[in-house]
Length: 254
Image (cartoon, rainbow, N blue to C red; front, side, top):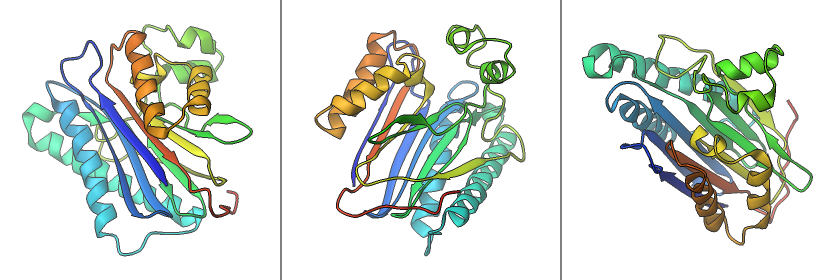
């Protein structure tokens, strides 16, 4: 599997409150995570780094990883719920971290399926031969307004409360994690990113860059550069996975 990870402060922010990781046991067993922190002075940085490092520790200590889509979904939900509790406890213990939280989007590839779990508005996309698909649905105020027909998708791009989340990791004692599994094929590309990318680069441009770039590293660099060229007013994180092409990959559809 080919992978790439870039997290960038952007052109405006003083600190990078994003964090990310790609954790590999084998080429057929990979966990990727992107978190976009929020909170008071540096608290968002604490939240995102704590979430990523905790998931990394869980991954490294796990003796077995579920292989079926249903079990993978249950496993990711359980681990992210545990991270939520850890973050919430930390924010209650340390005054400087009160109110901290983070988005999280994670993708678990088992060689047979891709399972995606998320909270917040960091996203996961799948590029294959036929389509470029957003696999996650933003937990945000503007997305709720779009779903109810109150505003259009075009209006949502410029809404003044665009960054208001309806769910985040660590802000409440418990949280409902969304998890789904998807069919994937050899050579498919998976993109995980924070909203610092998607607020500045639309889906059509994302698809064009993923399809056209020579290497996965170049793709990640180009996406971050485009977000910065378009303003770079937020932290930008890009994680890319290109699935192995030598073996057939299938899944029991969920």
